[in-house]
Amino acid sequence: MKSSAPPDVEQPVTVDKPFDVGKPLNTPHPVAQACPQCGSTEYKAVKPAAMIAFTSDRLCLSCSTQYTPPTPLWARFIFGVIGVAALGFSVVATYNIILGKLHGRLGLLTPFVVAVVGLGCLYKAVTK
Ligand SMILES: [Zn+2]
Image (cartoon, rainbow, N blue to C red; front, side, top):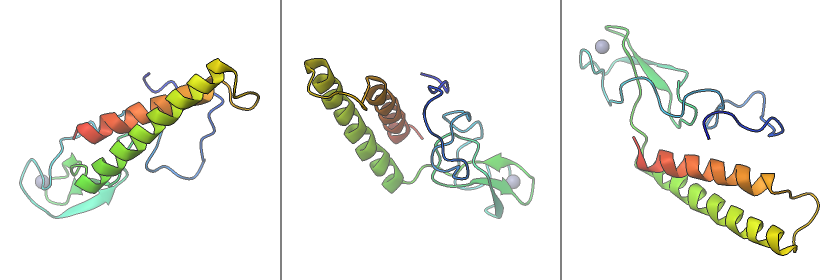
């Protein structure tokens, strides 16, 4: 379950936050509140490099080091809630599909995609 999302998943064209398929799940930059190189707190906000990000990456104005602020606690909480809800939905949906109660529009792909998104959210909730 890397970044190979099924091709029929609709992706909004203009919105690039908080989900941006194609980018790495985690930021490739050091995670810090201030510049990890020189300790400066002067920064310019730049586009986040991670797939799921709540905050912009920062570009140090003194030494041009790019770094990522830690995921705030409230964002972890939201990720956790979304993750659990998505996993719960996918389990219930899969169960109902297997029992034959749910037909038509909802194929097995939908709970699978929801489960992947949920796992991504949970992963994001427990890592920095
Ligand atoms: Zn710096």
